Length: 245
Image (tube, rainbow, N blue to C red; front, side, top):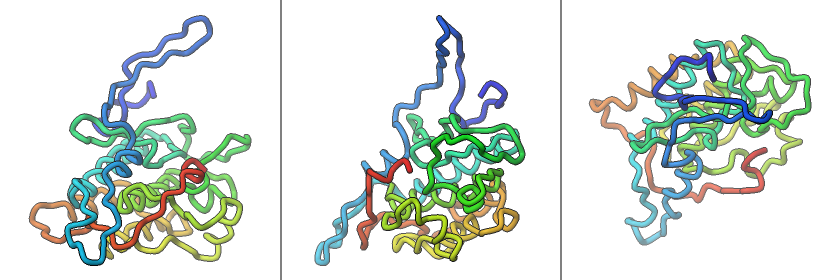
């Protein structure tokens, strides 16, 4: 973290020291907690058949797009610095008082262009790119795949990725071409961006700069389209037992 220049969408390091062989780290305080829990706390209930005002979240489509733009901006900064995050997920995004989203939790990060994992360190399978699952290879474009999962988490208000697939079967299903279906409350353009992030070949995935440009265009005030509605017609599943694996 000390080598990363300050950025409005990356959690700031205030200071660090060693005391009696223990490392103490001071980070900026972000009062609204992590994005996954925030989304779940504001998610609409499943809409009833006869009650059109059921299932409305206080968040707007613009709020959801802004989360995604903030995350892409922070990840673009890390990528330019040569940092591979390796654990990009909504639970590792923290929210400031004004709901600015900031990248946090660099516990699995590596400052290399390409990193091949040789240890048995726990990794978050449901957020990993296909090359990371099958060959333990991590690149900046592997983080782009994970961003696609985060975008899906935002659209579904913190649902669990691949809720019906056991961890040991996930890599095989992805190699066979399976991808999560489009959430009913997001536009085709959002799902198209997810699918671009989930291309099997890393070189075919967009850069974070390209992702930012796409999302900012959608969030322009002159664009009156609604890209992520805050009503639910299908209740997206939360499985806490799969939250971190």
